[in-house]
Image (cartoon, rainbow, N blue to C red; front, side):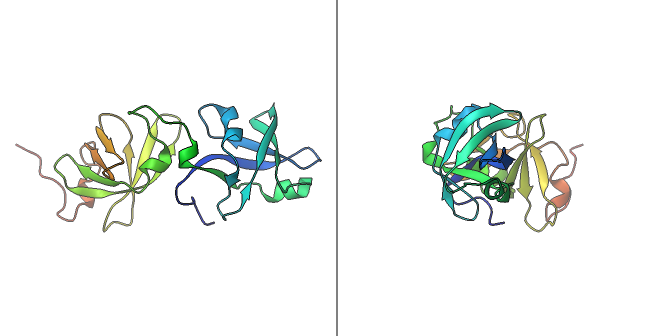
Amino acid sequence: MAGRPEGMVCVGAIAGAFGVHGEARIKSFCADPGAVGDYGPLSLEDGRTLTLRLTRPVKGGFAARLGGVATREDAEALKGQRLYAPRERLPALPNDEFYHADLIGLEVVDTGGHVLGRVRAVHDHGAGDLLEIAVPGSPRPVLLPFTLAAVPTVDPGAGRIVADPPLGLFDDDRPDGPAEEPE
């Protein structure tokens, strides 16, 4: 799998075929689920582009017609493919909100300016977003809660995030070892 195309934001995924006439079932990742059809043509991870026309809501998403997809087998072959739109086609967000794609790749520093790592991914497991941080010199990533307390500053323009992580989250991964507790 090639991964997220540069400058693109994942807006949905193809969940498989719907019916027998070449429609696909689409899962939307947009705040307004029906907006997934507004950002086309959309790109797949392998670089192909396709048009998408939502035809009706169905359980868990939408039925849609995809350009170049004429049969159930064609639609089923695309199952699992993520759908990407160019970042500039998406609506602007308020200052305190970010698209996940805007966070991936940002350098993460602590409040003292020490580099903690880079954002590798953003996970949402229902209780709030977690930033997956690739830590230099460590084979294990660190999951940082994406809350105002743990991440007081996000500056995509400067390419960095200032973090105030919970005590002990990064300490054991720093090259100089665990931080000393003040007495």
